[in-house]
Image 1: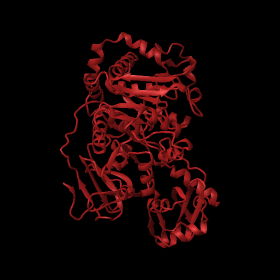
Image 2 (image 1 turned 90 degrees about the horizontal axis):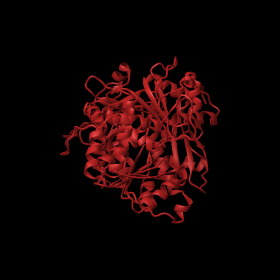
Image 3 (image 1 turned 90 degrees about the vertical axis):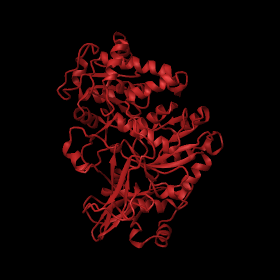
Image 4 (image 1 turned 120 degrees about the vertical axis):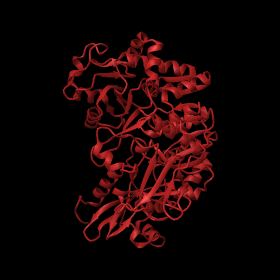
Length: 575
């Protein structure tokens, strides 16, 4: 098994690991029974009124109270329950409680606006929405008032079900952590009170009816091309992905994990939460990412592992107090990162100044999420240029996107994935599912990549992001990696812009390191001396900050609009 002799195919290996045949609820209970007095969850946010420490016994008791409340609300197995909130304690309780009763957790990006929220609530057939009244600059209650005028007519939400024209399947809105009550919304505490009427036997019976291959979550894709799609992930796929990711990272029993990724993202609720609970560790929860707060939590709570995208690591390295030596981060021994190009110099700086052994991952929502991961002992050079080898029980191949032919080593093509980790499909979108998972069971990722003779995978961009300049393919990631090697460049993104003569040209958008200056002409000569002439961007644009997703990744679609605006170009027009 492993890599083929002369083709870019990695056939799944077991690596002597058997896949778990468990539900999330049963896994959680096994851990709570094994280490009841071990610290399970820490929220150290006195400034937000959250100063919470729960051992596994207490954590289990809170989860069970909520699970009973969910049953009391009339939520059946298979019903869709959406959660729209930052990483508050209730979110974490809901992830486990909903899994216990067989309901489907539908995660909602906290950056959603009213139209996006309406689409998800309708497309996802949401039965109940758990939310907060506001977060940062978004007022979710105002959005709901606009979407659901009938909400204010629901005077007793504990007994009266919501009936709306816009969202005919929505039955309740539960409000978490709000200072005042809202007409039509059921307070979270009242859900717990309703649960007192449900017996332990009723909860056990519901939990026993849940099967490992049932859908546990629906996560909506970003939707940068067309409407977002609801990715259906099972107990089996997410639990085993968490197991295999943690195993390659060397996660040991009882480790402390600083969970800073948003819970609405698979990196948060699967990689961080499930990996930690599987290993009966401690979740040190971040309500949202803030570099200074992360440093304070590391200094005070001594986690051994973190999971952060490069933009988060850069923010921590740049914190003035950290640079003054005010925070001790040497407890960090392991680190997961990925999502964009990571130069050797950044890996080295993170390792030296923050600590830990960075490991690079490739993940997609549709694959539960991690496909490939570097090994702890891989060189920094290998970690900066690849995303490692496929995890156990995972097959990967690189094919020509036009013919489907499997390519040779180090030839660019589309990455395809097969195995236990694949989504069950897109919710209510069988045609889109068939477009993504072919008849042979291979999921077409839309990622351009290549595989070397040792099975290490390198991602060079998205199919839709590839720049075709005068008939030649240019891969943005390759140029981004090169530009990040310049000491003055802190962040780099390359996007396509229209050109009358070449069809498309590359535009490099750069953020310079603090205090650095860089002349465009000098940078152009730097590129011409080191990379092929056709790969040298036609345009170099400098910005003070990058538009990021809630999980800290570049928003390439927004960056392209920024480039077009800065260059005075309109879509479809020449330069």
